[in-house]
Image (cartoon, rainbow, N blue to C red; front, side, top):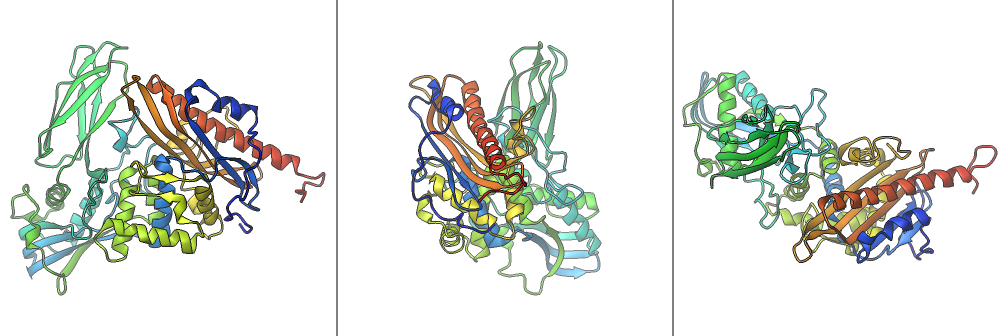
Length: 520
């Protein structure tokens, strides 16, 4: 789209947001809170609504719009991560005397979410949120699918015996300190073990399933099924090395299966064992013990002259961007920083920030000082955004060949990702709001309530005729007596977006002449 969409609003229109939006913002929960709102016609830069457009707001995961924009531009939407496996040693017939080295490339899923059509699968509430948000679910794909594919390629290369070891080469980047969740060059199943408890009959043990099942990890459970309507409360503990996991607690007989997870403490050792086991399934014997630390001290300085015997190729980055934005994938957003840094030959993930700064200033024509960032996910105290800055960034994408791809990579209200949780029935805006939500909440121990530091929403509103508007709406500093109050705040922010979308439709309709053309 052409026009002046990238220009910053130069004035603040009247603050009359209409009775419906005002009634939401004036609720008691927002007595001490501050709302921000900015809606701009993407075609001509006209400011439709504005409230504190140039003030900093705590953003939550709307920061991912910035991080993933930077990665999308730097890597390219068609970029694929190719993870090679090299035979380091001497090949004699079907025997490798030496080691297999998997050279990790920062692939977010390693095939663990790839659907038969090659796209990346996700659910509205991702499994990585299982310990924080009720209703997290698993995708059906095998988390070990990428390693199984690599193992079959090794076998197809003619190797049936590795008289040596398997080594994970994780030298691509240094896992960044002080960032959670912490990305690593090799990640299997987002570096977690999934633990699914399913109720049985009252008084009986719950049924347990877990994945990925890799030695020496083991799981035991004492979770009991209680009467329908009873308390579901499941606790997870693990040994210091993470390999011995225990579940305890109760699950109601009428409850849905309850998902929890436990962190993989040593992703490289885990990946090494998982690959050795995959090789075994493919008919390749490894003489080294399958469990134990990753022997990275044996890695060569380079692989010049070593034969590549396998390579796993990821889906295109646009599919990873869609996953990260749709489920608010924190690990993937932080990993994007490392992907950018590695793309520029750096092992320091924080070297991504100058690249993103340059993209904002020189390519997107957005003043970088409208943002403050220290991570990729938007969950540290320093992170801030202005409504103007996000609107300008969103408008930039509409002027690129990737306009539709970027817009449709966002959660769609009532349809996909976190957007599917609201506006599901009898909602006129369903399928017409493409936007990233953001949340920061915590416990206010002084007042025994929920502190809603941030609930934000930014993206695109689509009128019935396809006309697009960029928008940001958010509240900082709200409070709620219970977790249900937080969900109510989330609904309030979504409802404002619905009102804006419906107003946009009405505005477009009112602007049509009798001949069906828009009046100038």
